[in-house]
Image (cartoon, rainbow, N blue to C red):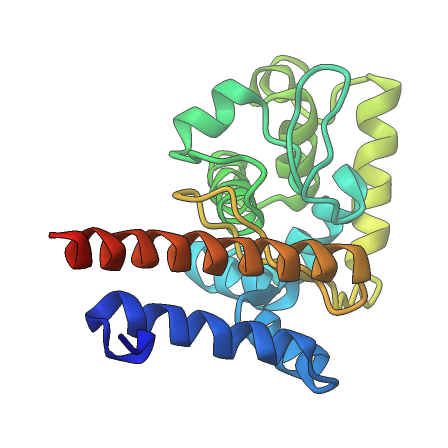
Length: 220
């Protein structure tokens, strides 16, 4: 019996074989690059979207992100602050951020919190930034920027960054919280080899299952 005629399973194997052949040709790097680009989002776009949604200047959002984590989505501080905007676990939860290490969720959460601080302190950026760092309670307690060296330095740095052109062309993989799978980059030859091997093994297993089914049918 021709394997091409074995229903949907046979068609699936043919599709797998064609895909593995694609892996082996010299144009695969380009194919993979195109697929990867479609699954990526620039940080610039996320900051712009967050700015529009919560009414916080893009320059302020990026200045805080630069000061907090240098735009590192995986950053975590000694006190447990997470992601680009360095959200504390309780703060992230209150903002509805399910995955603090997802850049989009994290930046949106940080923008929402900054918007709240700006509203609480009459639109005064320096007080909102101080509250972001030291908490609104301390800003209220001291009726201004708290006399903490860290907070005062933090506010100064953020305001300096606000006056700079913090253009970031950083591109981050789109996070799919329903799966732990990640795309292999075109430059990762080890990853490509492992992917190629894995695909071949899957095809061989499917073929063996089909042949066993055929033999069983013939015996009967």
